[in-house]
Structure formats: structure tokens, C-alpha cells
Image 1: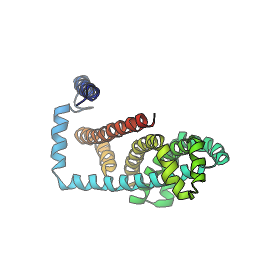
Image 2: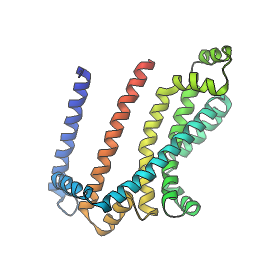
Image 3: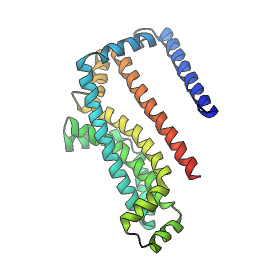
Image 4: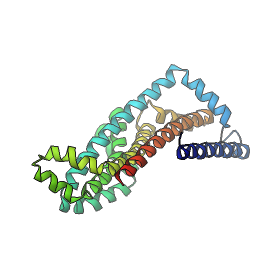
Length: 250
């Protein structure tokens, strides 16, 4: 392990330890009506992971999130490359996409329900709405910032549109595109969970909403812990890859 990797690992462990200590302190202040202690929450989460019912909810969320993330990536890359290749289209579309990105997506939820109804389609659609815009924005900006010399070289070599995208544009824009994918991952997960909280009868979001209604602090804390561990682990991995891509490009 290199010195930099060792330092990052130590900082990560220190952060985790600090969060656990803060959690324990908050529990001591708020009491059992608001929070569950870290050790008890971990034990209860392990108990839930041993039940078939909980795995059913977990797999439901995993399917919805996987589909939403796949759609966000495909649509985001398609929109980003299409608009990024033309300067005028990019200049017109960028403020529109930024405005859409800033709009609270929960305001679109009634439209999603009317269009897709309750169940898996609504969850996937809501997750996709959250993730597609940042991926499109980052991709569009990355493609627009590619060195024009590379495009001229592609034309000199008589590369077709698909060959130009595959061999010139995508490798050159990959670091910034990956940053968009990293942001899109987090937002798609949030959107999928929100979709489950308001328009589903299965999934971790539904489980959270039910636990909130029943004031079941143990379930709320256990599901939240699982989601935080998953999101933090994947986000950390994506950040490491993102940094390496930018280092290679610089």
C-alpha cells in the first residue's frame, strides 16, 4: 500500500470513528424515542438480513435502482453527446438543463404517478428523472470541451460519426463524463427511494415509510444504516476511479 493510499485509509477510518461517536452522543441526548444506538442498530440490521421478507424488499429496490441507473446513463450519454457535438445546440440546451436540474423533482411526482401508476415503472421513472440530467450536463460539457485538434484529426483519418465518438470523443471526455456518472449514481438512488416511499408497496423506501408511520425507530435506523453503508462504499470507489481518470488526463 502506498503512503497516499495509507493516509486516505486512515482518514476514512477516523471519519467513520467520529461519526459513530457522534451517533452515540446524539443517542445519549435524544434517547430511544428518536434514535437507536450504533451497536443495537447493527445487530438488528444483521437480524433483518437473515429474513426472507427483508431480502424481498432489498431485491425490489435493487432491481428498480439498477433499471433507473441504466436508463439514466443511456439517456444522459445520448443527450449529452447529441447536444455536445453542436455548439449552437449546446449553448441553447445548457441553461435549460441547468434549470431542470435545479427544479425540485418532487414537484413532478404527480405527473409520474399519472403517467406510470403505482409500482415498478413509477419508481424507475422517478429515479431516472433524478439521474439523467446531471449525466447529460456533464457529458455535454465534456464533449464540448474536447480539443478541436482531435476532431480535425478524426476527419483527416476519415472516421465516421460512430468511430469518431468511440475512438476520439469518448476517451478524451471520459474523466468529466465519469464525474457526471458519479453524481448521477447518487441522485438516481435518492430518486428511486423517494419513488418507493410514495408509490410502492415493496422496497426499502416503502419499508422506511411504513416504519416512520409506525414510529419504529429500530427499522428506520437499520434501513438507513444499510443505505448509508451502500452509498458511501460505492461513492468512495467511484471517487477513487474519478481521481485516477483525471490524473491520467492531466
